[in-house]
Length: 361
Image 1 (tube, helix red, strand yellow):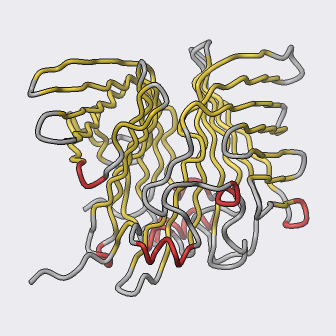
Image 2 (tube, rainbow, N blue to C red):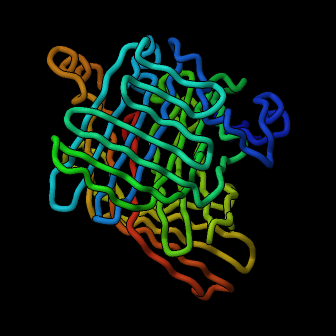
């Protein structure tokens, strides 16, 4: 008899009761601060957008750097701006605990002069960092969603937590960007916001994952595939949301199969990267969906050991720290099949990521 998996997506009735959640409704407090901010925890609020000039914008508010949850609160904002034909612009805001606040009633996070606030439908995000000012508004077009409770438990007794709430799976964006005292540029686009938190360093729980989101014609996509660490049975943890015209049409993770094609070893990170990431979703005996992420460019290729310098870098390398984070852009295609025949196909630009926290197996 096989043993129960040591990692599970929490979706039982008792899980909802334990967490104070409802199956049929997501409430604003769920996007408020869900941890104490103290030692052992981490939390972040994330926003990304594809803008009409071909740029992509990513903003993340952290209670602390996610690789150091044992430490005290160390608030930080990170911004990445990628523009066609120009190098990536990355900026940071680091703050003290006194310069940070976050409501438990709703999303209302402040770090120095920056804020990230909203009500599960409309969000305002402001960042002032290193000569870069971003003012963005996100208005939801697809309702807030979570897979089950949004919590994944690790351990035989649900010892640890990693949680994910896509508060705005897709929405309209208006972003005003000012660079180095130049003229402000206001651009429209499509955006996304989610919220993550946990209670132990993620590298102890998860080996790696693919995650991506996109709009493809009338479809909105969020797709992820997480692999637990060896201590948790290398459990595979798929997550998917597929909506059409703002209505959810597929979100049962048990019906997903992942395949990786045209895999190569990335020269910088030394991680295996798939040029094509494919999620197959079998809805029933007649209907099937395919979501295909086709890489065209690597936007960010960052080794964790390189985020520290000097003796800390040397010690990280000696300790075998070889985690990496890669972010890609390309084309995302949704295909619908009925009785084996392709009846719909739609494609648009998308952003997705590969996070490697552990060693390549």
